[in-house]
Image (cartoon, rainbow, N blue to C red; front, side):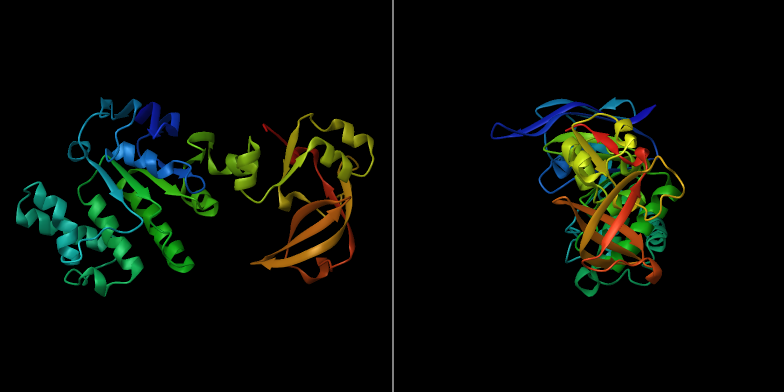
Length: 341
């Protein structure tokens, strides 16, 4: 049963649709990512859910209750912004306690809750510091504790990690997921980073121009993109027209078994250098024109009849190819994915 339900939500600015008839169904306790490029409507959707923006039409239902026209204060939805939005004149303790004081909760209960959540975000001993005395990662943990201390029905995270360096991002990403699972929170997480969304989510909605291009589990989204946009945004796919695909393949009866479509996607890591004895593999030959090391893999760009193909191999010296070298690659039919244009 849906815990958060968005029905046909539309939002416009100066007659320009920012959100176009969006619908979402989210189960309680799930971690959902809204993934897409800047300006696609992700943050606008979050602001509509928490009540900072009033949608033109549609409904927002939480736990069976229609909250479309309720005030921000009555929605009981927590939100963490990219900018942290901490009160600079308040200590860590006071920032986290702020919402509890507004609710007129007893001081002893406030202290108990604040200390509990300080421990959850590993900020013990820093309760008397001010925001300007903390690192960016510590400030974001204060913002996170402040958002969840009120035990909101839903937690909204608007690109909370984008201002942090890579190592701190990874640590905080793990902390957020750990807290979500421990507290069984329902979370909507906005990001433009596909690696981040795939690593942290139960389910992902890919947005483009105010619409959902595809919604799926991280694994299915990565392995089976359905549109040209999703394939280009997720996983550095090779996106080819039908004619380009035919042009790059060596002539073979196997080519006739390719499912007919106008556009196809092929993952860079789907190519192999040996056919593994499978006579039904598709084959292509090209010349290496680029070679870049990316972590434990090497990414190659090869020219195949004036079409550039990208493929990746594990970083193993015996399998390296050099610039200018001709290479033969093999591909399974199942790795050639037909797309909607």
